[in-house]
Image 1 (cartoon, helix red, strand yellow):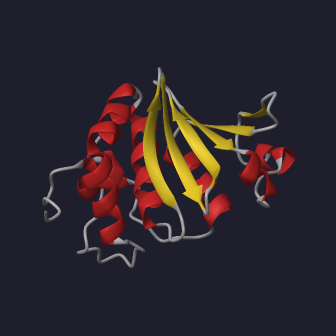
Image 2 (cartoon, one colour):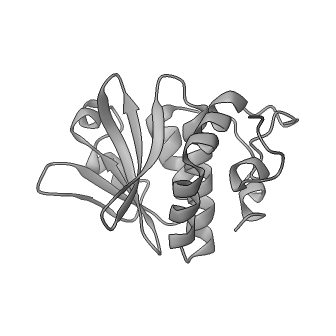
Length: 169
């Protein structure tokens, strides 16, 4: 089934192959994410009531689809809506979708990552904490936070300008 033009927020957010700004877009990966998970992606998006957080969600899910070596997907476990980054049978990163923020997690396999340093993360984010399982949590409140965590964890990637995500919130 072909990727439907302008049917999903991820496409309207700039996930199309006609990018002229030099962005790093893997259209096939985005098509797979959207095609396999659109009902849950939209359900999670609908949970968010703050426009800036909706932009952050769209950015992170779009960005995730461009990552090589990761299988990324939304998950609903009871009342908890989360988005997982899986790699090599492990689940190093995830974020929980809340009405007013996203809560990024460095899970046990992700704690080995150089960015998983609470002291360093506090220099970039207002709300960083650790839970009893030793996981590091970072509150994401806007697209700048989302871009910052993506850059710290996955490195520099050229994606669309923030205005591309504002159009669908």
